Image 1 (cartoon, rainbow, N blue to C red):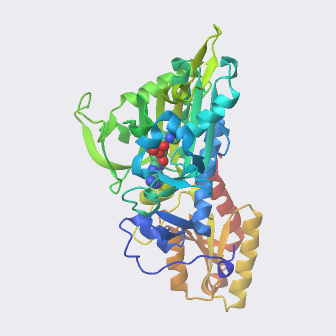
Image 2 (image 1 turned 45 degrees about the horizontal axis):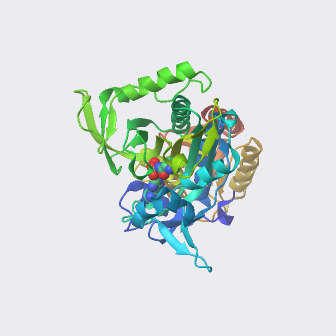
Image 3 (image 1 turned 135 degrees about the vertical axis):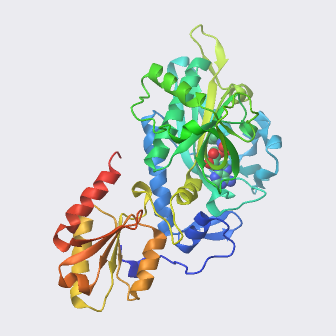
Length: 445
Ligand code: P5A
């Protein structure tokens, strides 16, 4: 992508409304634009990151055996009246009527709709287990939308719903999602800790929140010091190996970690760290709460119709964009982990008016693209200082800096954004070095 032709409206000054780094940098890097409180346009750079996160989540949901579908954003109130949640949900639900005066709502979550889908088709235990998910916009009329995409009113969620005949099998489905979440967060370059949680308006008796530790997080949390050394990647654990998964789940959930609502000191170890965190996912097992209300029953082995056992599993996809920035930035900008970066490498032409520099840049741009890298080529006729500042702000993992002085000696500069390390490197070996480095960091997907 040529920056001179791209849509990247970066801002030099800090927007006054932004209280935390991620919000500030998302606005300044031209990733989002606020349209009204808690509602955003995703500009091209921001959308690239959102899609990368979405794809990582999708990859791990598919691997865990869930099937993607797409439910509507607008739902009929009827189903919600059947479960009693139309009243219970309160002011957070955005309600509307259509031209026939039918009550509709913008979905804040999809337990009702998916249970309706399920009951329309599945009648026998032979067709179980089943797990359906979608990645769809939600609306919650939050009292205090804030921190940009962290607490939006309109936000993108991945929500999955599992269906099983027995509680035992439902717990296995829950554990598979638990593992899928740990693998997905690790894939994005995050260390996220599973914590015992409250079930709130979703209901149920087994629930975990997935928390990214961060001083700017909205939740107060208590974690055992042990978590700092604990590997949460879920690597070498397999979905199909039920015994191994159960053991791993028990291991992970036996180390103390709790949100403010569930922390009562009981079972808490002495070496407890009290800190803050960002909730980037939340999973629930709630048994037959919705299937009983909506009569989603299946025939069991004895021929009797029984309500299906359910769980639901949410990941805050748009919130993750902000959360990743909170965990990866310095005072001048973002430092994207390679797998979620909007482009792999920024190519800076320090002197567009110089024929030799421009020819060298064009050559590199072509070669890097041909090697399969996403390149953002800063070919604008602006001063070098602005180019450095913008590149550091938008935080691509690598910068290739090309100027007339270096070229005289056949070299360009390669800067790694995460460490600010800069190295001179010969024009001839740049492409090989960069593709090897990047392939290494992108491996596993
Ligand atoms: C689980 C999936 C649910 O809604 N029903 C379907 C269950 N859970 S939840 O905890 O309420 O939400 C899941 C995740 O969505 C993100 N999230 C938000 N992100 C941005 N802005 C918001 N206002 C917002 N509300 C929830 C969180 O990451 C949460 O864990």
